[in-house]
Amino acid sequence: MDAAGGAIHEKRKNGFMLSREALQICLEELGQKPSIRDLTLLNFSTLKNHPEMTISLSHNPLYGAALVADRKIYRSVGIDIELKNRNVGPAIKAKISHPKDFPLPGLQFWCAKEATYKALMNTSEFSHTQNFSDIVLSEKSWFHIPSKIEGQYEVKTVEDNVLALAWIKI
Ligand SMILES: CC(C)(COP(=O)(O)OP(=O)(O)OC[C@H]1O[C@@H](n2cnc3c(N)ncnc32)[C@H](O)[C@@H]1OP(=O)(O)O)[C@@H](O)C(=O)NCCC(=O)NCCS
Image 1 (cartoon, rainbow, N blue to C red):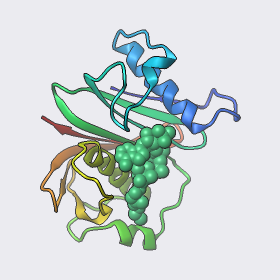
Image 2 (image 1 turned 180 degrees about the vertical axis):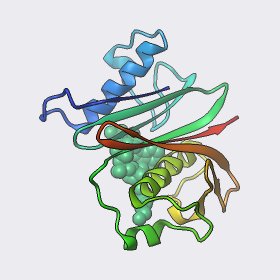
Image 3 (image 1 turned 120 degrees about the vertical axis):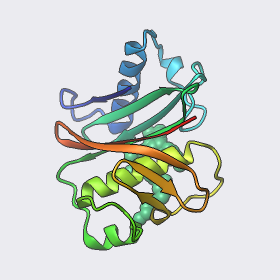
Image 4 (image 1 turned 90 degrees about the vertical axis):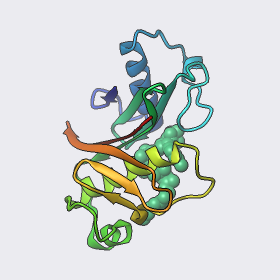
């Protein structure tokens, strides 16, 4: 389940708060009545009071996003939200690319790499950062070469944003 919240919020609210609000919406849609304490994260993917769920958060200056999934079905998830007007130039694209990547426009490509990176890191299998260029994007799936971990992803447009979701099933 994913939720994006944003344009209605005052400018003073930052991305951190917007992503927590998105998380709250997700939990409410799952029938929970989360208090602020319910939103305490033990790491990037676990809610202190709901360890049965695996989560991921993302934010930009105007929007926040959350992805929540059942650990019985999903090993981990990742989400990234980027304002549509963000420019991803050829140099950045080249740095994060693998020769076998499915061709996507710059921002969609960046967004997909970030979401898949978060899903990968949220497995808790890694103590060090991993290279985006080692995550190979196919049209709907992805593969991390060093670990052989694989998952699915999708990229879509939501209001003024590009939003990418990534997941690894059990
Ligand atoms: C994780 C990372 C991708 C986050 O991206 P970002 O654009 O800074 O920010 P986003 O808003 O999309 O996401 C931030 C949220 O991701 C989550 N997050 C942070 N580090 C994370 C990690 N290692 N794994 C999973 N989730 C992570 C957090 O919930 C964070 O929000 P919070 O600090 O408010 O709790 C980035 O900070 C990072 O660690 N990059 C390392 C690899 C890299 O730099 N690659 C670039 C190659 S050119």
